[in-house]
Image (tube, rainbow, N blue to C red):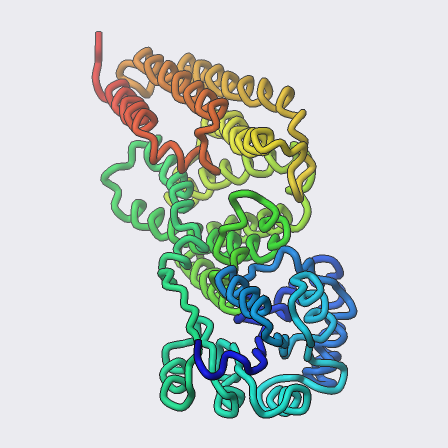
Length: 479
């Protein structure tokens, strides 16, 4: 125990006690619940940062129980409180937010925060601390804005600060304790952008493959460019969706570990990265063609509507998801400048509706295993499984029927050397879809069935066999 152990311990809130910024979260929540307030925010900010924080705090109420607290720091503070140490919460966040956090945690003796006229940050916070607790105190913070406070404190507690800030504090102050997190930030960004979900955009190559345009390199280059355009734009929507759904994600047993919901990545940086990804995606789409850019914009509009409202309606959400899958195939046909057949579009609507229901059923099954009755943020109940299950399986079988009609179509009979060989593909589709639904019933399905298919060995073998059978039926005469 150091000599500073008996001095009052002053703790910052944003970035220290919690891994997020309450002001940014409050702004997002306000925009979500009262979109028209975005206009008023401009005038609030013109009146000063303190007034801005006060108006935001009075307009919306964060659920402080869901905030991503630093558990190791909480345990340390509880131990210090038990040892008789005085604890003070001092933050630039509005005082009403700080008071609710303190009431929830139950171990702070005093709360200092911003109000209508004072933005409690930097030297202003230092003056408030010295006025309330005296000149002898220990300060726990995380950022460069806390340097003036650490310089006057009896000792410092470092909570995952930037390396440059940590070096300055160690050189100028006595450090009582350090709390650091060693997670790989690059990996967190990969997770936030959901790069693994880019696999779904391989659907853009489907029209190129069904047209057997394997040696037209210019078309391949255009589709490849379109693939990255869709992927970057999709990453922007994924990040936007995660930042939009913080509360519901934090209530979800698995989604609460996502980078933004857990506080692993700051929301402010998330908006910057999402904006840059979106801009680059649109630029790549423009490089393909104006028609392709129009499709990408339509995709973004639909996904935005899905994020804001459509996903809260039962069955509407899965219908939209299935259409977004089909839209990728249509976008691939535009990028490659090849005609997409009616059969392919009809087949895609049924099979992707089934896959979207796989995703929803897997989520409801997890909730059922946990004893929950309904999904947070969505109009689904566990009891809906009795309807969704046969609906998904029926849609899967409908896609097989459409594929069978495609085999019997005159254009297919004329185009393939051995069209009846495609019945092997129909058998493969039946097996693969049945396998997905069995995996779902066992609780082994990931969030997205297409991503699962890439990871699952049995699915990879089945898909490879179907591709081989298709090529053989196209080019080889089996007699």
